[in-house]
Amino acid sequence: MFQLIRKRTPNAKNDILSGLTVALALVPEAVAFAFVAGVDPLVGLYAAFMIGLITSIFGGRPGMISGATGALAVVMVSLVAQGNDMGQEGENLGLYYLFATVILMGFIQMLVGVLKLGKYVRLIPHPVMMGFVNGLAIVIFLSQLGMFTETVDGEKVWLQGSNLALMIGLVGLTMGLMFFLPKLSKKIPEALVAILVVSAVVILGDLQVGTVGSFIRDGGGQGLKGGLPQFQWETFSKVPFNWETISFIGPYALILAAIGLIESLMTLNLIDELTETQGNSNRECLAQGGANVVTGLFGGMGGCAMIGQSLINIKGGGRTRLSGIVAAVTLLMFILFASSLIEQVPIAALVGVMFMVVIGTFAWSSFRILNKIPLSDAVVLIAVSALTVIFDLAIAVLAGIIISALVFAWENAKRIRAKKYFLEDGTRVYEIWGPLFFGSIQAFNSKFDVHNDPDKVVLDFMESRVTDHSALEALFNLVEKYEAAGKEIRIKHLSEECQRLMIKASPKLERVIEHHIDDPRYHVMEEAML
Image 1 (cartoon, helix red, strand yellow):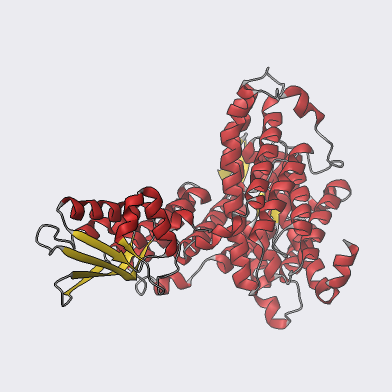
Image 2 (cartoon, rainbow, N blue to C red):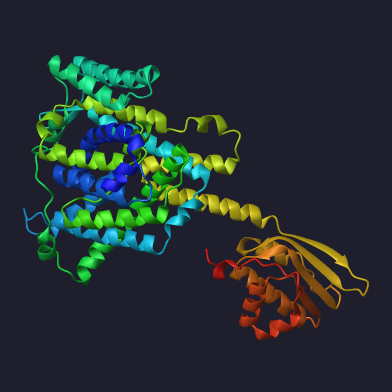
């Protein structure tokens, strides 16, 4: 680790200052997500520390911050509740089922990395990416609105009167400082300075506003003070290792692994674009998986990449692994030694920082381009944004990819063409243009007139591509139709691989295939090494 830090000293100051800012922003987020999942705040804080540290050191994207996230927490609510119901009252069995699930989730993510499946994030279309960014910005904004409440007689109510005005004023002060400080000097860590200034105003002015400490107490927590994470031996004694347990935690682990990797890899792509560098998606899958295994073993709730904190880090100048390491280690120091100080940080300062992240995250250009891009892409962009807010990131991204894939298939299905002409000997030639795949089979079949064609027919695929099993089946059926009509059919300019697959499916097809030195060298999808 020390060798790694020495290599990155040119940017060390920015990394350290940015890491300190991120650590402050991590505290209320980790605590809030722990409350959402129905577990103790320290479970969320330990997860933020362990996952943040491990992914910063071993991950595939320097500068990206990982920790406990809301996208995972909302899935964990049901898991913890069902786990508690399976044990005796007060046994808190749901917590140990959560730890077991996080461990299994980590192994699934590591398997994805070992199989090098992380590269498929490149298949996510740009409209989906823009919708993801917009939707996530809206989610972050909505999550901060809960900070404009207070607890009265055990119930959450919206701030009113002078309390609301004070909250808005402090949030505005934080945002103003973050907006104007970079205009004075690019070297000033605006987020950290804004948090310190607003904290000083609140403490010195003895202003009665919500703080990190009051936020924890209102949620039922006892405070930030804690020790080092401990190995959870109880998980192995309280959670039986049998098929019933696997069938219970397995679906949750799969969902959590999918959501975690999608959010992490899309955040990785976003940071790649912002920094104009290239991360390693498969390495990130391994690091995320390994981090979740460790955090599950040592009492954390699991997590993934955090787009809000990652953007705070990048915009604060954090570019290397050092920034993430500093954030994680500083968070642990908060838990061990500085909990009383951190609890005095006003929530308004952290909300202001997150609001600036929302402004910087949202793709405002999407409003300008909506009427300039294809209608299908506009629909995908809006749908992904809405689904991210209504459901979760995984559903939104999968829906966006499916819509984009269907539109692509439909558009390509209409591009199949057949140029028809006769040779001097009366042979009719069908020169096929465009991709032949499952979507274009019907249009392809409509090009032929088996009954009225002459006795000799040639299919030329020089300008076409046979891309899947449906296309192979269509060719096989077409040959059978011509032969059943007593006519001779020849197929030329098929790729060598396509020829092998057709002959393997039916050896009699070998006699209808013409071999040429200029046969194309494309691969059929079902056999290709993707």
